[in-house]
Image (cartoon, rainbow, N blue to C red; front, top):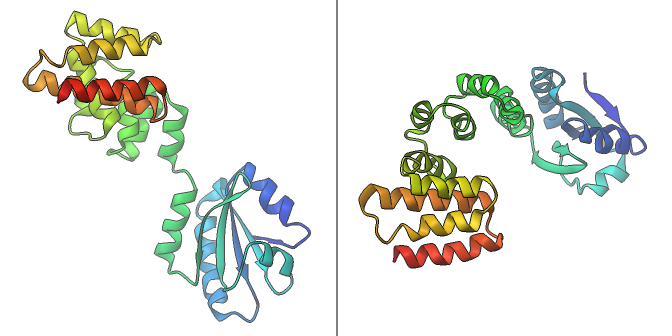
Amino acid sequence: MPIDATDTTFEQAVIQRSYEKPVVVDFWAEWCGPCRMLGPVIEKAVEERGDAVELVKIDTDANPRVSQQFGIQSIPAVKAFKDGKVVDEFVGALPPAQVNRFLDRIVPSEADALVADGGEANLRRALELEPTRVDAKVALARLVPREEALQLLANSTGFAAEGLAAQLRLEEDPNLAEAFAAIDRGDTETGLDTLIGAIPASTGEQREDLRRAVVGVLDDLGVEHPVAREARRKLASALY
C-alpha cells in the first residue's frame, strides 16, 4: 500500500527511507483527472515488485512546500529517489508498459542482485535469467577453467569481454603470461609495457589480441589513471 506523506514527514518517509530502498513519489491532487488514471497503474506496478521499492503519495495542494522544493509545475509528476537524490522521473499519466519500464530502471532485477553478490553459483543463475548479460559472463569467466571461459566470452562485445578473451588466448605464451601475472599482482605498468612492447613484432590475430588485451586493462583502470594515460600513448605509437 502507498504511504501518504506531508511537508512534515517527507524527509523521513522519502529522503531517509531512500537510503534503504528506492522510493517512488507520486505527486498528485484530488481534482487532477490524469492523476486518478495513473494512481492505480503505478500502485499495481509497485505492488508487483514486492518490498523492493516503496510508493509514497504527495497531495500537492495540501503540501505546497515539498511541491515547490521539487519544482512541481504539472501533475501527475513521479520522481524516484535513491540515496536521498532524484534518480529518474516522468510527468503525465503513462500507460502500464511505460510505468513498468520506469520501475525496471530503478529496481534491481534478480539478475542484478546475483551479479552484485558474485560467486559462481550466483553468476550462473544470473545468466539463466538473462543469458546475454556480458558483466555476468566476464565475472564468471574469471572463475572457471580456460576453455569454458572462452566459450562464455565467444561473441561477447565490449572492452572487458574482448580483453579477457584475448588475455586467455595470449596466456599460452609464457612470456605474455608473465605480463598478465604482473598486472594481477599490481605491477600494472610493467605488465602493460610488456604487452605493448610485443605488438610491433606481432602479426594477424595475435597483434589484434594484444591490442584487445591492453585496451581491456586500460578500460579497467579508467580514463584518469596516470598509468593508463601513458599506456594509451605507448599503445598508439606501437600500433601506428
